[in-house]
Image (cartoon, rainbow, N blue to C red; front, side, top):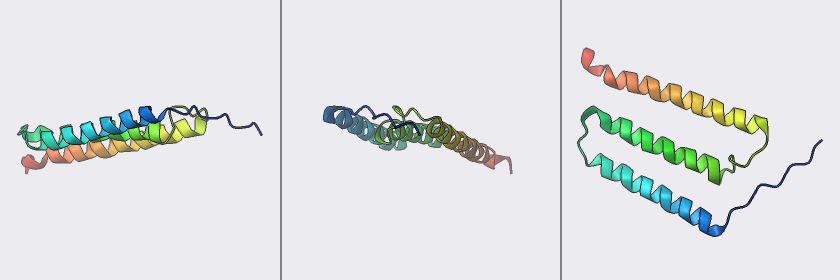
Amino acid sequence: MAEHEEHTSHSQGFYIAIGIGLLVGTATTVGAAFVNLGPFNPIIALLIATIKATVVVLFFMHVKGASEKLTGAIVVSGFFFLAILLSLSLADYLTRSWR
């Protein structure tokens, strides 16, 4: 078996900056909740949540530096099913007024 390569470790300041970015994303989500965007409020909230989840997966779960193909396949399949879930939820939300 091939030996695993060491992941590149980032500095503590890098993780603090990522954490501050996630806090800014959370504040943006809260701020967007107070703005009346009509039917686009849930879309904006889900978009911000997806961006924050992507940052967490890439940096805190060390997927960005992973060299294994299986890791990439699992992450891509997870986001694929997330896209299916979000598109079905959006379709349900947008067609509720058709009744």
